[in-house]
Length: 187
Image 1: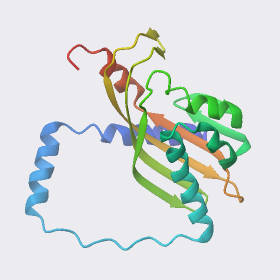
Image 2 (image 1 turned 60 degrees about the vertical axis):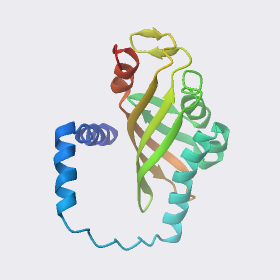
Image 3 (image 1 turned 135 degrees about the horizontal axis):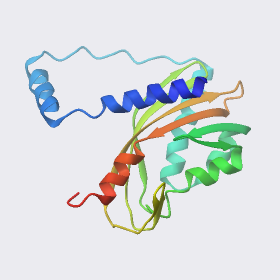
């Protein structure tokens, strides 16, 4: 299945984000000795790609403002979503799904790190931050509010129709890492 391959690629990508502190230090030391790279040219999008880009960016802006319903007009009625392995069908279910973190994490915020658009496809690498001030349903049961902060890596792959509406979405977030941050003593 195509979405399973995309999810596997996303998981592999997320695994590469788990660089040890030592490796990061070595990379930073090497960067200091290397000459700076020349600035990249700004990519020019087609008119359609610009619509896709604008819509992708708007999803997370609406999320950060807790205005979930504003994402409704940006998606097709028959939207298909794979959200961390959970299938979601249709606009209304999608709106409910994206709002689920607001209860446990009232200050939830997404910061986009990389956004790529090619034709009707887009990908975003992002970080979700927040403080767990409400109860959180996990696969192993309800986790009472810990009042701990989280920082969770994620990546999303978007597919749009000819009208620029979202028809497919695969979301992969490091949920296990988030739970570790909330449950490991001394975190």
